[in-house]
Amino acid sequence: MKVLLSAYACEAGRGSEPGVGWNIAWELAKEHQVWVLTRPDDGRPAIESYLAENPNSNLHFVYFTLPVIGGFWKLGSIAFVFHYYLWQIQAYFVARKLHREVGFDVAHHVTFVRYSTPSFISLLPIPFIWGTVGGGEMAPKSFWQDFSWRAKVYEILRVLAHRVGELDPFTRITAQRSRVVRVTTEDTAERVRLLGAQQVEVVPETSLPTEEIEQLSRCPMPDPSKLRFISMGRLLHWKGFYLGIRAFAAANLPDAEYWILGDGVEMQNFQRLAQELGVGDRVKFWGNLPRSETLERLGECHVLVHPSLHDSGGWVCLESMAAGRPILCLDLGGPGVQVTKETGIKVLAHTPEQAVKDLAYAMKQLALDPDSRIEMGKTGQQLIQSKYNWERKGKELSELYQRVLNT
Image 1 (tube, rainbow, N blue to C red):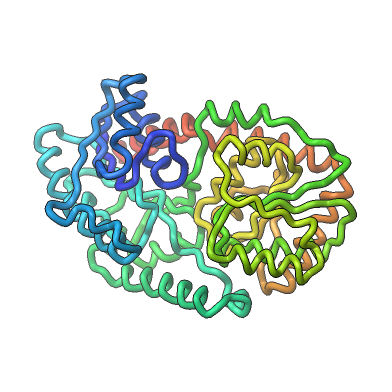
Image 2: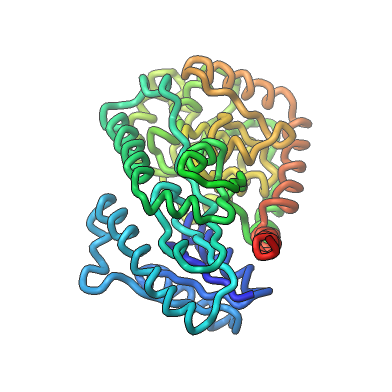
């Protein structure tokens, strides 16, 4: 097939959204002719460097950005969203001209993974796939009581931005013209159905490259005599690490430690909380670490704690499962889809008090049952191998395209 991908974020060797764009393109190009619409700003050097060493004649990149004001996206988050919207409009005209020359069989919007902004390539006269898209997840209102005024403003603006996007007639057209909309969670599925989408599938956006899965699978199991929990990510209010700290203090496990990797605006608040709860000497903040050191720290820990309040993806959960670590998370967002009862413990999120109590109980469970930890870790590795690897994702998309064309 001749496949057109729209990937605003696309970069070889990266995770998160750029990794989604790159890995989908790379895997599809193993079987199809693939053209990728993307920006030259960040990803082009890495893409061209990778292709110089690993050429693929099926893979074609079309780089463009807005004329004159192409770099204004660097001015802040509002400018970034505005740039993204205008780039989507430009992508339609680039794609329309390209379609006349190539004659695509299917068009697919890959990144950003954002349901409330339209993809104008949906206007092409060929079958269109939207997503995986996300963003419909929200922090439960009962948890807002713990947020600072700045965090509350962030949450309000985030919700307003999505609701304004839903009012855009082109967002509705995108949903209605999609043969299939792939969404990260049931929360986003509900929003895109309201926009008029007919065929909606809940499919996690995230996966891992085969070589990374193999690398993580060799992560050694640490000494069980000193139990360590670990959280990794940006230290933001909605990542919920404050819930992990409270739960760790409530669990009161002798000799256990809680390591937190990452940096962000909540760093001092989380450090102060640990001191106030009397666990400051057992909660260690590592800050930002290089990738290699991050994996070393993961290898020294037994359980990943990821109490995020509205995470569409949850890459760190996949990485930890690939390393054979059980996951302790809230039953929300992407982690709530990825983690099963065989690979970890999902805690309901009705109120902060209830969530902390249940997280603490789960920590005690995992502390007292090392055999269960090992079994969950092995099952998590099997799940990653069978479902969350990019090679499998590429075959899955090929099957989807064929199904769409056949109908």
